[in-house]
Image 1 (cartoon, rainbow, N blue to C red):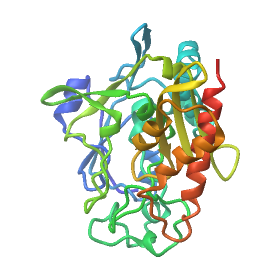
Image 2: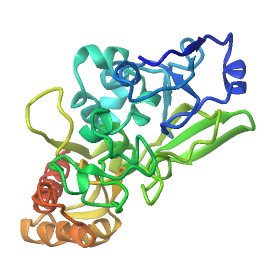
Image 3: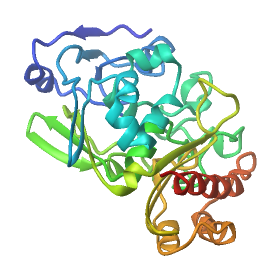
Image 4: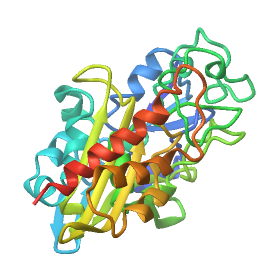
Length: 332
């Protein structure tokens, strides 16, 4: 582990002044909350900040619900949110995404804000034995392009990086038009979860749109008929404690036997949580007829690019969308 100074600010205002950062590997100071992902990366020399700023006890951990929707404190644990009766009843896609993440022990410790900021599971990023990783060391190359890339992205990629985004929760939140509340040295602002993460482009080491010193303080999820009829489908290599090969978050508002509004987001296939507006448009007004669903799902693959080992994801992604829509559509 690279030596660092641990800062324990007395309050959030004092923490923000230290201008730590999240989601990039070249930051001299980084925040830590639950630490379930960060501690491992510190131990393995993947992250080497000179200072680590603890947010323990400084962030809201409450789970609030009104007729307008949910407000989830950034320090609320994944386990507490997944078990909340309003979340399970009114936002099942969130509860399902959380329960399909990690292990019970990790969910008891990991925070909602930290989950959104976890780092990719690309083995070339997480193993410093591989020198070529632009996300870890800018300008070094991307070993995954011609390496073992079964787990990697097929949407939103660039010649600099094809690492897939790892968060199940983020995919569900993107489907529900959720917003994160941020606080930094210059004040507060709100950002849609869909715009929290950046495409890699030529700077994959900068993963989010957070400014220096900014932290996530809460997640706000609007209530809607579609949120109540939602589902998270996760395809993975084993039944538990595994990251998505492909996932689909679907929320539907039905009008009789037809889809009035559809929201579709994908995981395991994008360099960020991936919304599929072209699929949503095709599903609007459609029935749950399997042939029509397959035609709509095929639109998700228009800009997909396989890299050899992961080309199978193009077809699997479409099948996951169909299955998730059928499941959500069948809910009362």
